[in-house]
Image 1 (cartoon, rainbow, N blue to C red):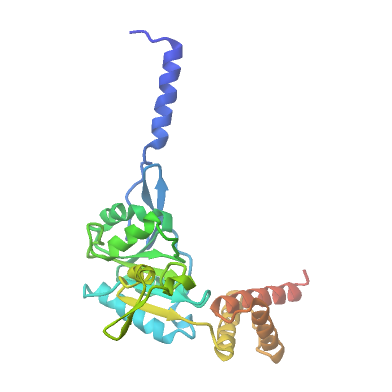
Image 2 (cartoon, one colour):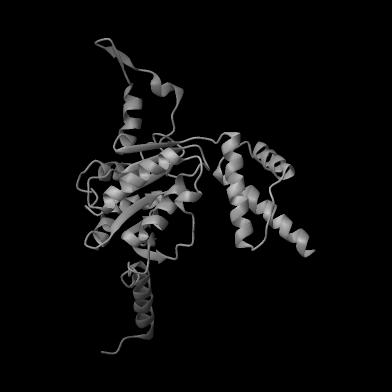
Length: 296
């Protein structure tokens, strides 16, 4: 049967459009070589994309979060041993080490079979597909949602809530969920949320609005709080960051009162004493020092 050129061109356009909607042919991840992956959305579904994990943060380099490290190390070790362990919510002050602690856990335990899958908030609707992709792998997976916040009524909020609640979307035995957030309950809180509370048998019961807002965070077995650094702890972090940057650039930078003064001034301008501020200051200071000695 001979088709008209116009019809052939039309069929080719239709086939091209359908092909764009189909998922990409992606080879299975070799988890023996890849320690981390991102979920990439494509059309109606998505796929796991291996990433080269370049962050070299170690647990020893994290200052001011000793208690938080102990909690997360113990929970992760239990998980790797096939023992009961909890999903975890790391919340608190921005830049205080929540994400860095998660990355350090991967660097510490990757050789024991720990693997990370990072998922963006919008992709939490694909949780069941992600679980299906790894449930038969001989590794232990942390599904990481970094810097997560929700607005009321979002579908991804409901999906995560269901996964944590042990419903049909619950994670397989080899997957835990770690979430970092600046918000303790992952949702914005308003003054009006506390209206409507009532006393029952002499005890104040939360309002329905607050009950709903804590219903997600309550499903995490572990809450780990992070706080802003004291000035002493901040200076310790700056010392560590300066030493690491100097070592990587094969130079020596002696500590001085001028350096300490500039570090404190930098934190005051940022209005924040935390590990992130210390890291940013150290890069600025070391970079300027290298520029000076090289005469650029």
